[in-house]
Amino acid sequence: DEVVNAKEYPLKIQLSINEIEDTNGAGDTFMGTFLAGRVQGKSIEECIDASNYASSLVLKKVGCDQPFDEDLYKWKEFWSLLDSLKN
Image (cartoon, rainbow, N blue to C red; front, side, top):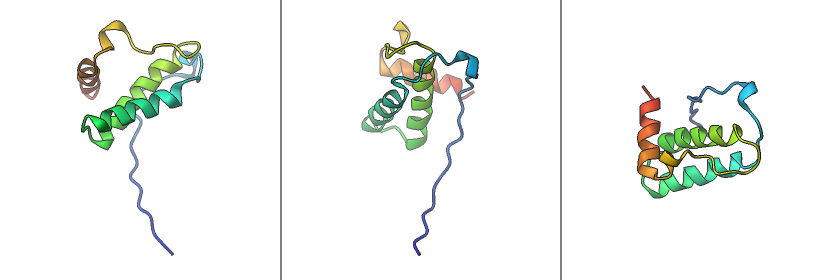
């Protein structure tokens, strides 16, 4: 039998059930953010953190809407914001 080792990545974003408005687009946002980060050379852990954060923004809105505030449109600012959340 083949043994597969998997690494767990803890969820660092706190989101209460009362904050969730709609789940539409959350998975797409997760994957899009993850792949964008990997293309930019980010680590898997950084991509997962960013994807969880971006998905949490989508969950707070009704419908498939742009999840980011205007100051988060640029990826560089997005990654900087994510880094600040780690502290």
